[in-house]
Image (tube, rainbow, N blue to C red; front, side, top):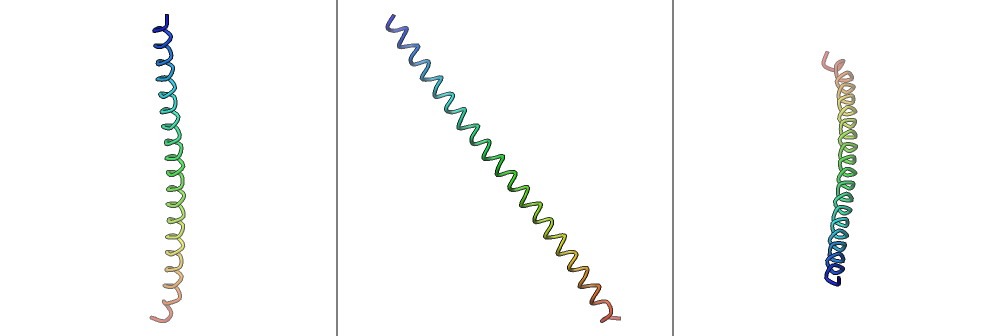
Length: 69
């Protein structure tokens, strides 16, 4: 009987370590998704900045046109 209890104990320890590993994997995946969201936010802000730059360039060319005429 003792060996059966020892086997059960080791089995439960293995199960615990497996659950801990799965928890860390889920935490890593959550942080990865958070990083991906931040990357998409940064890309959106970069695209907004580029749009603003193109608008400013267009305005500069509109102001420059009468000078070259």
